[in-house]
Image (cartoon, rainbow, N blue to C red; front, side):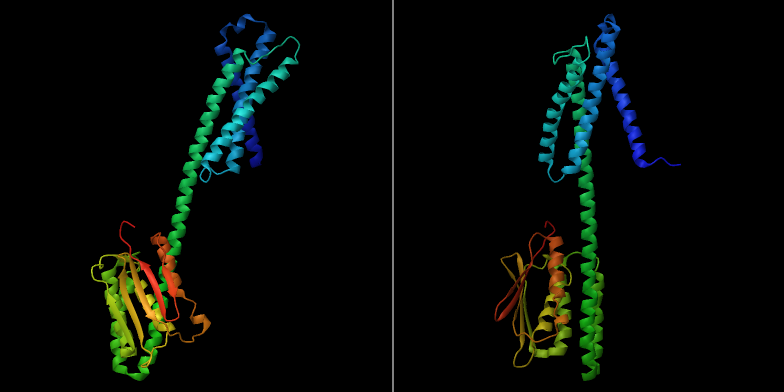
Length: 344
């Protein structure tokens, strides 16, 4: 029959308490070698007094440390936890001495005081042991909490980031296949060219799937291939102006620019009389601007959930302290992407 866990725990506590009590008794003899010259009654009470003092100091302070560990986190409030622990020890210790002195003074022929050697020896040694336990608990909890927090944070970031990146592929492919469906009925030769270009574009998507960032130069080459596909659909009704000279080696999340272009094309009317103009340029050496004239078209709510913009903003949260900025006026829609570097 297995012994219940709580019973095992209390058996261990009792055994530890017995060992501490016996250690306190032994230390009383060690620091009072002339005790053997006293009466047996005095020896008995003096030794037991020392044993109980060790027991109350050691186990009592240990329980207090455990109590505060459960109430206050070393990681979140180390200063508060330390101060309360020290204050508690300094309050608890004299209370134990008062209680033991009062208890032993009730015994006829026995007198104890604050100034006895047993008291100060016990206080000194048990304070040392208590603060050793206190410091050990502090370091153990701090280290464990730091390791656990960092591990959980990394696991959550990795899982969420992979989920965000995986949203890109089906989102991009779904919209591209929709475009191809329309093109097949209009011009089969152009549809074949579209498929060849799409295969190159999708190869980039697959190649960058495991990367958190890519150079602006590499991303822009991909964007130009993507725009070629869109030009087949929209011809001169879609105008894109690009000026990033000197910033080719700065970094951005892969496919972020393509998603912004796709977002602009999806949500705006594109016609001969209403061409869509998109400007891509760098502002203040640190921000990539993607701006388009605003001419919203009505699309179903389920298709206007803003998956692309949310995806980009969420990925930047993992990569930089700088946030993606989105601005909308009566005539323009602007997205500002922080340019990244390896130091960031």
